[in-house]
Image (cartoon, rainbow, N blue to C red; front, top):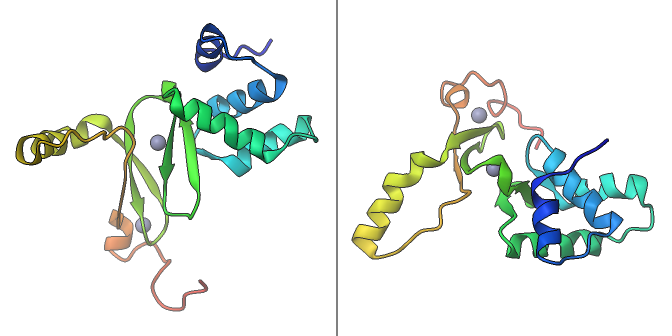
Length: 152
Ligand SMILES: [Zn+2]
Ligand SMILES: [Zn+2]
């Protein structure tokens, strides 16, 4: 039996109706190993509920975001991706050359947060941040991509 934990329990505690579509959306997010886009969630839900509307997916994501149950991130692909709050706080290093995504621990940015607070009196919400740059392989020219002819 498929048991969806975390988000589902918290949603029903808060009195939100758990429609089959909502449950499918939640299990798509929680079941994804990595970050999932609204389009990918929609594709998974539509496999079981062909009549589902993608706006239902967007509305559910908005709700979950508002409740702090999912985090969104822009990994530079031109679309937003999501992951469940339960998968832990972390940040990402995104290689602009090979598009590799490296997960880093939340604590990595805590000194930056301290500096912003101390010098700018600004309390940064650094819960899920993408930092763009170049990975080790690309810096050393080992990735094979990028150099020479570029197909786009
Ligand atoms: Zn993430
Ligand atoms: Zn790279």
